[in-house]
Length: 281
DNA sequence: TCTCAGGGGCGAT
DNA sequence: ATCGCCCCTGAG
Image (cartoon, rainbow, N blue to C red; front, side, top):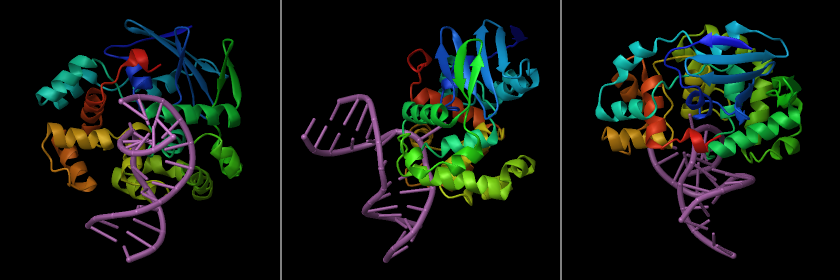
């Protein structure tokens, strides 16, 4: 088994705290998937044990996905500006941001409107099992996230069986759009404002989902999604008027955390919703 | 049983 | 720029 030494890393909170919906916990290990890879992970103290399947030992992938290069202490010193953030950092020490694949992030968050996190995960797992390739991860069956092409050609009735309701249409149309537009290969090269404009052209993607993809899949540290919890953070902690429009709240928090709203926002998100990793796996 | 809200976004006004 | 509606599920 491969080992990476880490400092200031809280693996469970990163994997199941709402950034991603492809991770499960089984017998001491986290198992996750991309569109071409199954991953097995476990943290013990300052060591992360890991393996990738079916191609083994893809260390660069693990480093990129977990963002092991992020300077945690430096970021904390920049975002720890008030008692709410300070309390959140104490409650969720070593919370980290992930960088998922673009297509996985986008296609996952398309399922999220008006759904709670456990329900999103359930739908993603139903889709994985039905449409994803099965990979053997040291004896554990892991279903990969379905290829974009597969989702695009799957009948709507089948997609509806994942419990995603009206979101099925945008899932299918977005999969087609990704193939036709080639956006997945282009968006990584774009600056954030352009990437956001491109994302919002997609049916089913508005302000919030666009910001989710920018934050959790494209690695922009200066933005953060504002969902219903984010709105509560803005109004309850920072006294913004509840009628404030999304764009104005977004500008406010981007300015407040000055380059690191992704991190500040994630700490406050877990804090205000009372995330408990023990009961979320 | 019923209501309500859940990591929103669209399309008609 | 608002606003009703979209589909499904679990909690109360």
